[in-house]
Image (cartoon, one colour):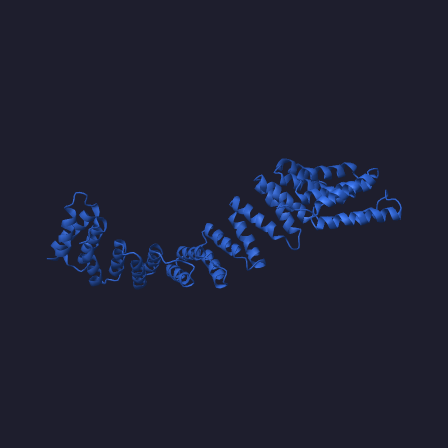
Length: 400
C-alpha cells in the first residue's frame, strides 16, 4: 500500500524563491519542467530522465533549481520502481535544504514510504517518527503511513493510534485505512472495536458484501449469534450473497441462534438458486436441521432425496429415527425389520437395538426381549444393550 503525495506546483515554488533569475530564464525552466511532468504522466520515464539529465547540466550551479530537479528525479524514479535511486534523489534534495519546509516534510514522508516499500521498517519508522515529532499536525495521509509502518512490524497498538488519527482528521477517510484498522482489530482480537468499525463501514459501503460477512463473523466471535444471523440475513435479502459457501454460513448461523428450521430452508433456497450441488451429506445436514426443529416429515423427505443419490444404510436408519420421533411405529418397524436382515453389521446391530426400543415403547415386551437377548449374546455387546435387556425384563415382570 504505497502512498505518494501529489506534487506541488513546481512553477509556483520557483516564483517564490530568491534564487530565480530573469523572467525569460524562469519561463525556460518552467517549460522544461512541464515537459518532463507530461512525460511522467505518459509513463515515458526513459525520455523524462534524459531530459532531467540535460536540465541538471544546465542548472547544477543554481541551488534552488537543483533542489527541484532532485525532487523531480525522485518522483520519476519512484514511479519507475527504482526505489534506491528515488531515495537518493530525495535525500540529495533534503541536503540542499532550499525548498519550503512543507515540501521538505513531504519529501521525508516519501522517503519513509520508499523504505517501507523495501521492507526496511526500522528506517521507515525512524523517519516517520522524526517527521511526526516536528511539532505540526500531520495530514491524514501521513498518519495513515505511520499505521502501515507500525502494522508491518506488528506494533498493533501504535498502528491503531496512527490510523485513528488519520481517520479522525479526515472528512472522508480512505477505505484502505478503514480496512487496515479492521485488520489490526482482528489480529489483536479487539472484536468489540471491530464490530463498531464494521457498523460504520456497512453504512458507508452498503453494497460491499465482504463487510456484511465480516460483521457476521465478528458477531459470532462475540457469541452474539442472533446478530450474526440477522446481519447475514439482511445481506441475503439485499442480494449480496452469491456463493454456496455464503449460504452455508448463513445456515450455520441460523442454527447457532436457535432457528434450525431456517437453517434447513436456507439450504433449500441455495439449492433452488443452483448455488449448492445436491449431495448426500448436504441432504443429511438439511434433514438434521429439520429434525432439530421437529419437522420430521421434512427431514424424511430430505433423507429420501439423499437415497436417490446413494442408498446408504445410514440414510434408512435416520429415516426410521424420524418415524420413531413421531411415534409412527409401523413405518419405523417396517424399515428396521428390513435392516436387521442386512449384511451390514454396524447398522444391522443399530437397527436391531432401535427396533427393540420401538417394541418396548409399544409395550411389546416379549418381542423386545427376544431382540435384546439376541444382541446381548454377542461377545462385544454394548452396555446399552445390557441395560435395555435388564430394564425390559423388570418392566415385563411388573406388567404381568
